Length: 189
Image 1 (cartoon, rainbow, N blue to C red):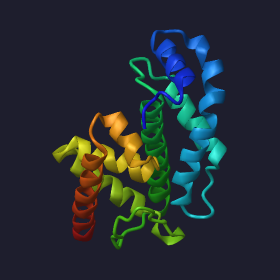
Image 2: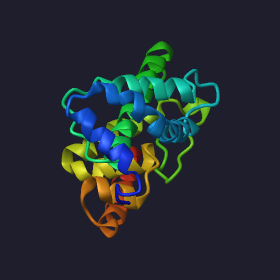
Image 3: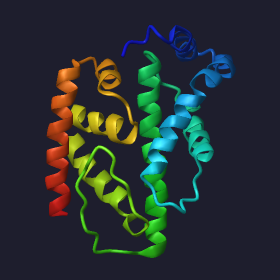
């Protein structure tokens, strides 16, 4: 998906990258609904009694995003990809804190599917997935990004292709490869 359907967002992101922090007041209303969609997508994979709400996750991600001093935003899809990564880190940090409280162990690995739902008794699955994903990213950064953007960000193949500068066909192939690799890695964990 190209950035042309969202020219105001792209222009504002470029202004923001240029150091014009006052554009955030105009930018946030344009991307807030998209950030909420990303947050809902993330929280759908969490346990039902998760203490982070959609709004809280959006606000946490927003605080991380406005603190990006080196960011050179390319377009709306690039911004949403970075937002997806921020939300992933927030949820991972939350899961690690919760696991530290519980000190659980003996995790049973689950296969990576397009929409993996983490049951309440499988809180640590997010951590197992993140550890496997970190190993995958170390081997092939693009494969790791495809998983992050698709699984954690709920982005379409077209949006991912736009952000990564590759074809949709390449993204689909990377997605299949990454899923197979992660399934094997999580099964061995």
